[in-house]
Length: 137
Image 1 (cartoon, helix red, strand yellow):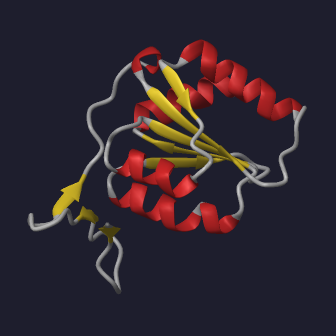
Image 2 (image 1 turned 90 degrees about the horizontal axis):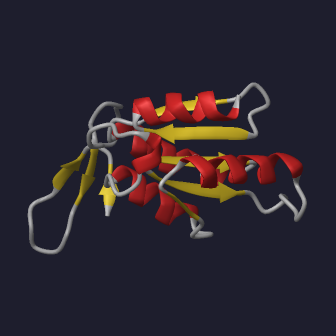
């Protein structure tokens, strides 16, 4: 279970696993986008044939190692905060699927970017976020 110290930011994200003492979560070293696994989450209102979603997903599949679609944003945030993925792209997600997970990821060292429309949020390793921005802008 990941958590943050109540009352102030900057306390980090922590994982308690069974009887082991909690360990602080931290994102690992940057790697090239072609060697990075990316999670992709979309909101409930995104329908089939959404042109921007299709273009985003196509660009990701052509340039990243792999793209995960778990359909469970909490799982995607956990994978990112525990350094099992390099970034999460959230397209038109509901606020409840973004806020808590983004906070945990940021406390684990992630950088976040939101486009001007607020429809697209990228959170992950700093160089991965930069590479994804360059890819989709």
